[in-house]
Image 1 (cartoon, rainbow, N blue to C red):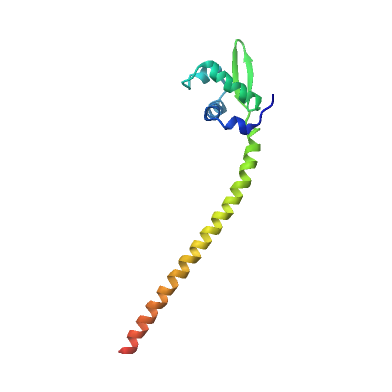
Image 2 (cartoon, rainbow, N blue to C red):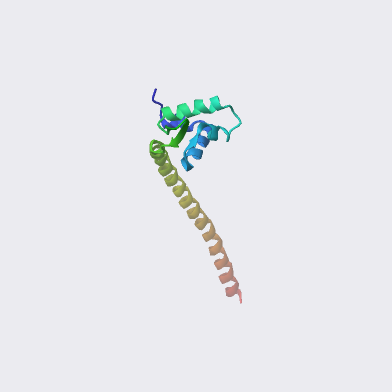
Amino acid sequence: MRRDPFQAIADPRRREIINLIAQKPLNLNAIAENFDVSRPAISKQIKILTECGLVTIKQVGRERYCEANLKPLSEVSKWIEQYRAFWSSKLDALENFLQKDRREKALPGVRKARFHSSGNSKRK
């Protein structure tokens, strides 16, 4: 069964496995040593990651090494990017609004100060 990368990154343990093997290929025992769960539980997570295309397993002698294939995460990145652009534009608009609001609030105070100071000079 082929799963999608969104399912792979939905679980924090799977994200951590991806982080570990992105650094260097590891065998199942080396991966399992990083978690407080059984080796079969890690094997289940590795199976899901393999089905998502994020992990490939290579047999080296009697050992099976897991290697990261991060290419499928580009689909996730593209999906996230559309929302990053949306929220960036919204936050930029909010920042512009707040700056404009601060300038408008500052100007009346400046005008009052000028008015009072010019009023004081007329009295002299």
